[in-house]
Image 1 (cartoon, helix red, strand yellow):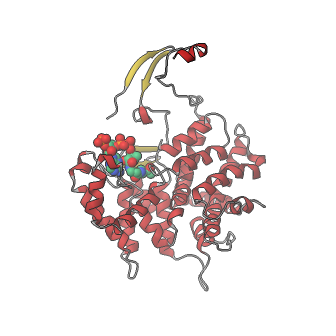
Image 2 (cartoon, helix red, strand yellow):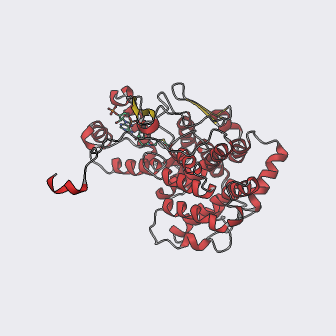
Image 3 (cartoon, protein in one colour):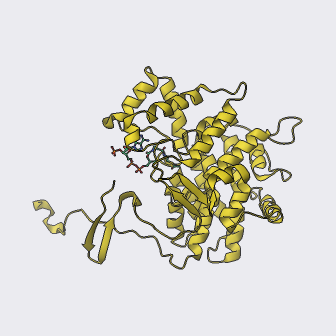
Length: 402
Ligand code: ACO
């Protein structure tokens, strides 16, 4: 547990709260989490119900506009996105400009930042209409950006957006292309992708969403704020953990001693090794998203011919960790990132693309928070205080005697 110290600074009372574990930075109507009970709700709807009974696009509508859409509203929302789903003319050059081997998250953050230069007519964050158009443009165009990053880094020709396909199907089609004679991507693949995006769509003030809010609080554009969120997401303690989990599983697979040796290494505090995909700042019992994702992994990987030894290894690793007092005592359980990688791998994504997929799912949450911040009368520029621990005043002239 963190110690919260209070002290009298020059200007009043200051609390020290490393990692903001006990600091509420705002009031929010978007997402409710009860970490002890493993409850997650978007605007009041339990994540388990949304996972079973809503699509990602409906969840985007829920997060951004406050309600699940009525049938006519959904069609209108989908049409708004389809109308803007192609990348602006000339924008491809931005994505293709990076050296081969560039990590997709670097390209993604740079591309979203650069998107502002192609939407200058919608860049004024104080104008409601412009903000609305910029929001739709981001939601509509991030799939095309992600798909192009995938194809460029794999040395493949781009696939254009197809306005006859739904949001998630269109993304998969732009990523993997159509198979001869088929209308669109495999329905099971599309269902899996849709569910994963839904489960990632918001998670209150996590590191990337807080970043979006901090940047937005300065009056920066939605493009600049979301680009900052993407950079925050890239770290291995946050969204980058989905890539790190897969790399950890491969490392365990190739190490003599396998799981037992790895667990001992994690427990050796000197090694600084973490069991990636385990632990959460808020969930101290279980992560409800992880349960849904594990079920999905079983559904996908138990199909004939789809078995992946890394999934079997992940199951064994979870069982081993949950019977070890190190993890039990610290209340460390699988988080959203533990089983996603093996599913993304089964769908055909490279390991380096995993965090880009997380960003695609989290985008509506970032946007919803940015809008909420903009309308909140309590919003002030984010500007934490510090407790200074450096030298007291000294003199440059006296430095030789120091
Ligand atoms: N493996 C081993 N030990 C761990 C792990 C882990 N994955 N997570 C936490 N611990 C230990 C810490 O070493 C600490 O032990 P101590 O009390 O003996 O010093 C204790 O558990 C508490 O951990 P903190 O680091 O204080 O927890 P915090 O809330 O700051 O961090 C975090 C949460 C970053 C998620 C952490 O659990 C972690 O690093 N997990 C692995 C990375 C990961 O999976 N990140 C994805 C999180 S979900 C998301 O962002 C989408």
